Length: 353
Ligand code: SAM
Ligand code: DTB
Ligand code: SF4
Image (cartoon, rainbow, N blue to C red; front, top):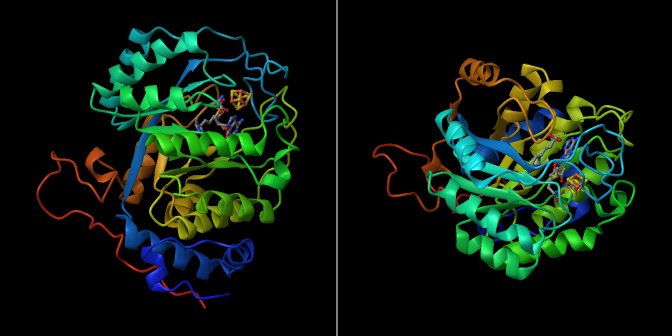
């Protein structure tokens, strides 16, 4: 494998699948040591960013994503609801802020937003932003005009996952192509909204698919600011209800590779934490995951109870990340004086031989 030289690390490294696979296959201790080293060069290892999710429009989705409870094509038994009232969303965001969340992520079970819904989602972004929280939305595919309206309303992040490798993708979703997903990511990046994009492990893919998915993400014109790594929550009634579980060691390896390939991104240990032991989550944090969703519900599925998560963070001596720490290159004006994690863009990634 060619060296990842420090000079290259200050700019962009274009990864090949072969290079990434070699890192993925390092002996586990080497891989974790490397991932933790890269993590420490870019983030405070004892801080974790807390996001909160709300489903603003649940179920009845026309897409056929085979993992999803919200597709109208599967028999998950979930009943469809209308778009929530703007006031309700803002009230929920306020509660999340009081519980320590700094980012509020609103998700809708749409293929793409309809023009008639845009005024309401714009008002939600404005209202949540006015609470001093970071805003994130995931509404399906976006066109440039919609992205511009959301950006102007103050949207900070847009979540749109590639889900898996390009070659495995057609086994998982048929109603939206991989290229369409990449188009939406380009539209979002072009509008100046930060990208949150990752995938799911447990869709019947192999370790090579996970490598290729991370290569796709790391080689975007800008790597995503946030990379959610979900563990499939196998939902009864969906085509993947009986999917084989992911080997936890392979899951941790994937987190480590994401950290190494996208050193400055927030890697989010996302769906599926209810199925993980505390020890596995701790290993994921050691491997470089530094963000979680807090709160008992994700969009429709369960997440660990808040007090349980707080106990886990306390046992690990990990503090929630303050809002001003999210963008170490551009500290907010309210950043407290005193020691803080340095902006680390200039620091080299260790040379791999
Ligand atoms: N409808 C929008 C879309 O798909 O673009 C946004 C919502 S969608 C539920 C957001 C992401 O959640 C999906 O791309 C997928 O990666 C993840 N997800 C959905 N169901 C999941 C499940 N059962 N287990 C793990 N992750 C899941
Ligand atoms: C992401 O990658 N994971 C979150 C968020 N983006 C929107 C969603 C997880 C959904 C888990 C299944 C559910 O709650 O229905
Ligand atoms: Fe619809 Fe999103 Fe679920 Fe796919 S993942 S079925 S687009 S809600």
